[in-house]
Image (tube, rainbow, N blue to C red):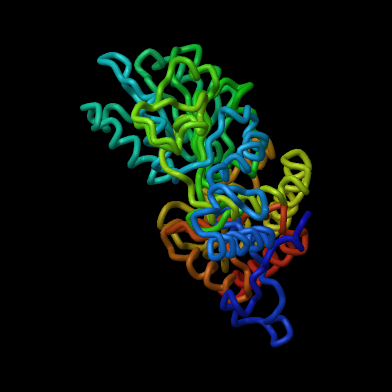
Length: 448
């Protein structure tokens, strides 16, 4: 755990009002790294260094740099780290662009619908930007999204997808599916999808297979190359701590090196040996980096580099993952011990939709919460999604505001879910204990 390597917002700066004067300057309980990771001190140092280079060397920084980070090669500094995090070869990685732009770029390469094989298989309630991309890509190829986008929903009364249901759809409808495209970790429920088995099933049916790793990279161990995944895209401002709107990345399996040429080429994907000679004919870099289009933001890239150096110091994903399992498990145990916790199998019985009547063991209890994230550590990362009950009764917002008033920073997903994510690089067991205790306090206060 490298908590000292990050800037931790205080209770005062996050707007906590129910803390003592002595606690105001103490670190807040920040459990929102699944939405925006904290600032690594090393990232701030590197950004400030680049600002100085910009001010003192200006355009010369592209080729002459006092710290050896020439701007024309800046992305090459992060590619080895990203390759290790996603389980890929360095040539299969490109640090570039933004998540949805990269998704469109990769779908342009890998979504090749025909009259009989044209569907895009995804999870229902994928992240909205992904859903928009799927629909617009279908329309681009003159297919009706309502027909072309095939969504898999959980079984009735459940919140997450069963592996056997996903594989069954691929097996039964695979001949009509052009592209299987799931999240690595589902943003809303926190479910870590069985990526290896999904990829294998897709390949057996002749489907292309890709993943959105926005909530997976830096969170769970990945082996994209060995699993045979065709492509993947991600952002870097969540568990990778690169800052708001940070630079994104993509992966393309090297099996496609000699079969896929960039259809939307740009000068940064050109052979760097002749890139600045401005030749009229595009000569792509071999592998994923040939997909680069424009020069990457140096400030955004070194901010990411600063965080990746912290990952390196931590030993990369094996020790980070072990600590993540411990922290998330600890938070889950403490939350499940709450008098307000309702086991997920009892939700439908005790809290029918829209019914706020007292049920269960306590006639005074009119609300509660359950955890919709899988309990199996192999099916989740560093996130627990709490569903507040009764659904639609407005309980979540009151709890969220209550937590914030004590300096517990989570993430609200309206109308009924709060996501809490103990990030293993900077969160502690004390953070988990305090978050659970404050939630109990808030819920107890709402009873009166």
